[in-house]
Length: 266
Image 1 (cartoon, rainbow, N blue to C red):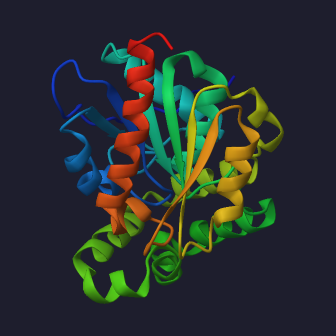
Image 2 (spheres, one colour):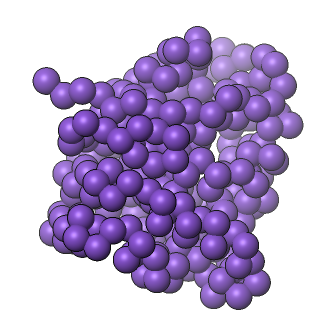
């Protein structure tokens, strides 16, 4: 028996009665990754975000878990505030959670954006190696490499407040929780299950992202029943932090089309 990890969610922000949007962050980051984009989305939507196990406000999990278990924890948290249907967007690890939610609870999801992510990310040995590194040396040992993977040179040079804040989230993430997330990603592979996903899916990739390049987004968009792909310019792996206006604009238009289709029973 696996205990579903407890997932902390923020209070929804936006107009009462508006469609709900749920946002998932990347490995080693917190809900604040989405702050700037949330400010732009909440004019038309109620927006909340969640922290992965042992990240931000979510407690340290008592035992290992899968990506599907994280999705189950998100649903439990939404149930606790009486929310059923929602749009979803998740970055990297948050994107993998989105794919598991689409597979396990597609009836609850209106549409989903999988941002800088994949149906499988990397190879298992690499994830196990990173888990071992963090257990030995802590998440702070990853900060230099993360900066190069997460941000463009322009962001590092001209928006040091943003990049420093997000890197500090990595430093502050619980070491064991981060390692367990790595192990969950090592076991994550839904490539052969994409064809079961019927809800609209937008796969977003970033121009300078070497972690999850265009090919992974194209694979998702072509694998699901109703998929499309879109590029975010001038961004690396954490596109919503580097280009919040561009990401919010694309998400807002994608979500509104599905909301309108549902209201017309299309």
